[in-house]
Length: 212
Image 1 (cartoon, rainbow, N blue to C red):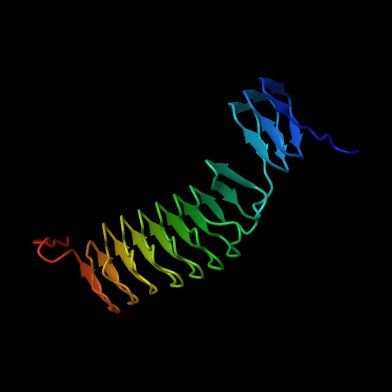
Image 2: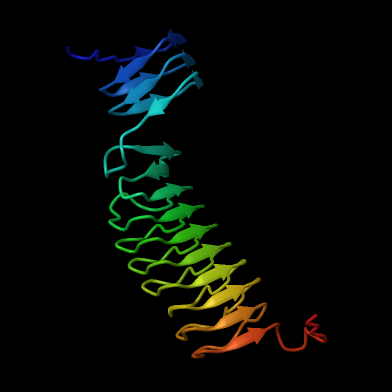
């Protein structure tokens, strides 16, 4: 049997038991939905909406499955197991699988890169094809485009890095590194062009190292 096509053009409050939304729907005041809502098209909410059970959205494509706030994509999940939350986090055309971006503009440029995680404002913002990178913190790994297996934890950690297999932990850790690979920086800004180097602390700041 053909399913019901529900359309709301109301300027007053409404109570709905359950609803299948196939067309463009506008709720201009408050609404209470006590059942489940299936959204196959667009829904504009100008008032408050209380939903007592579930919201069902299709997998994200260029035209479906996204939640916008103030005109900006804010929450979307893809059939390739990628999930993005935050103003302009991720994008609708990515083909990479298993990516997670949380925060404004996190992973906003990702294309075919896979299994990347960016948490924080502009974390991995320029990444396109790199794989298996992890960035936690404001602007962490923000300049990386195609590097792999980097880990940055901290504000601006490895923010200029374009290489692979680097680790930066702490504020601006590895911040001087641009083209090096396989380095470890713990609380150190590091140097550009380094390879297979480990640095602990910044010059003049560490006076004692105790290994029990």
